[in-house]
Amino acid sequence: MAVRFAVRGAHSLFPIGLGLLLAPLAAQAEPGNAKTAVVAPASAAPAPAYDGSEVPANIDADAKAHARALYERGAKAYAEARYAQAVDSFLEADRVFPTPQLRFNIAKAYDRIGQPSGALSYYRDYLRRAPDAADFQDVTARVRELELLLGQRGVQQLTVLSDPENAVLLLDGKPVGLAPWTGETWPGKHRVRLELAGYAPSEDVIELEPLHARDVSFKLAPTPAPAPPKSLALTKRPAEPAKVKSLTWVVLATSTAALGTALFVEMANKDPNGLSRTGAFFGGAGLAAAAVGGVLLYVDLSATHASVAGRF
Image (cartoon, rainbow, N blue to C red; front, side, top):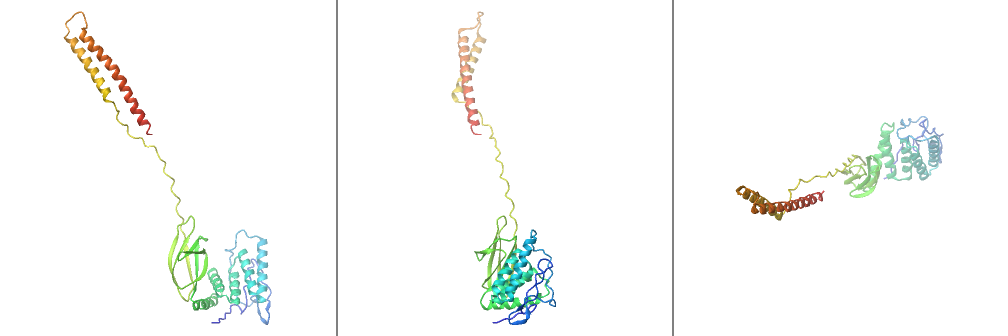
């Protein structure tokens, strides 16, 4: 279906004057039509106000001059019906100094080439960036015509925006590019997922209507910083009871019994001459056994302490 569209004159472009960056160019007639001009005449509705918010903060005078030269080259190419070259120049100028007006001019050039996808994408972006444009209704009408044209081809345009930008876009599970992204796909339901390092993935199922393009916006949430690893504090095990061998207990018990026997014998001894032989024997045996038991006890306790210390 052939479609025609007139905004600010059949072939007019926005002058990127902005007072800002590029002074309005003198009107240039298109070949074969002395009454049409590549630049909007003074009587045309003014270009949308532009506050410069999209201009890189560090843009310098040389960059502005370069952007103006690119715009003038694109306007000249447009006036001479070299629309593909106009697109290239306008796109490059927009990369240097992005403005809604350049987006409109890019869309117009794509429209003249007969590329509805490119024209629709940039008209929609123009409306997105300049919602208070004086020609908002006219451009919206052209957008509706281009949406209908794509719908007749069995596809429709989808735009996915992300905050922050440059998130990886997966459409129906397949990576298709970085957001912001605009492309065509079949109408119906689609699963849209965005992934960006340092942010939690965001996913939604959207429905694309057959005759209307759609914008989908995602606000990505930063992932919380990982908690620092817990210090592995050394946990002291409870002290284990001392391990004394049976032999040590036997020797100590023997020592106790011998010394007790010696004491009992001496208590019963009536000999005024002193210690009896029996008492002396048991006393000596008890002392010897006590000495041996003491050594064995020391060895047992030392071994237990060394075993516990080796576990820490």
